[in-house]
Image (cartoon, rainbow over all chains, first blue to last red; front, top):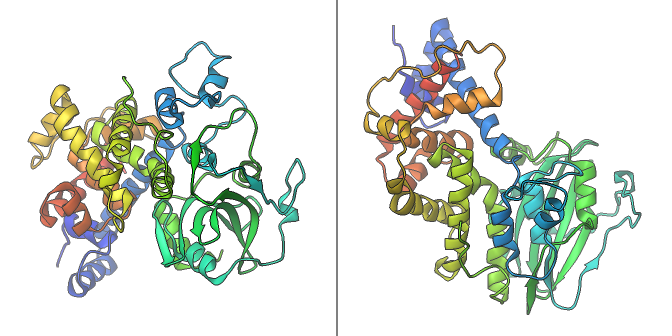
Length: 256
Length: 177
């Protein structure tokens, strides 16, 4: 009886075998419980590794990296705000609530203030944003829909000559469905937005106009929350999607 | 660690803005990759910082159309190989790299892991070689194909395949899965 090697089982997990080898492995799996057990242990090992790597995102960002990103700007950095109340100064942490690495970086990215100012265009302007106020009006054009449907987090995507963007955060909303935070550059300028897929369509939760890209200043916000961050904090308690979860969501076109 | 210039606010222009935004978005995965190389959270953040500094210095060498994540992985790996690894005594990781073809004993055999914690998984991960961790991350977590991982790590595809299988098997053994 044919018994697949660990290499073949591992490659089977990764869909890296050709059709013939795949069929051989599947035949062995169907007829040999030991092979199925070995495959399962490899799969679970990979799952544990994935969880570990995901946990790295939750670790606080060292202040030195925060300083590097902030540059020599005059704004009070988040690290400095935090360190005022802490003895240890070499590690950045977040006393109000634990932010993920991605959330912090997203916030930093959002403060790439371009041009004269920032126009916050959240659809709900309440101080305590409620997802129930999510607009039912679908103001998203086809290029943005295509982009939100298919983009991999962190990869710059050009949907057309006039639309470039990247997704910086994807998560499963506390209220069901998926949400994605994205930056986009079009002929109209740059913007940051939070979009959620609800009832089969992407809807804008909030957008922030970053200007026309002709001049810029990079700074960290201090203690104040940006509106989009408040929405993200409210909607995202489960953390970002792992890459494989995101791939699956993309394959399902973000349907639950 | 001494900070290098330039920082994000002393260069201007829309292309640089797009680059920095993409850089920020790429950092979580870059941080994970740093961990695969160093096997230590602290060292990983040091390597992350060095990579960010280098990326900011060399951003103009980043060509349009290149996937920034892969570009950063390459920058990171080059720094690790050329500047960091050689100056560190990596002990376990290095020795396991050297004997990568051997079936080495599971490092955590004495640990009966009934309820796994992240620390225990991290300890198990340390039993893997640097190369195994990198391949396991790139393929098993980050979703690279064997071909892409082979190109990134300058290895034959067959080596990627075998090291990945051993990484998973060793991890499963240490965790008694």
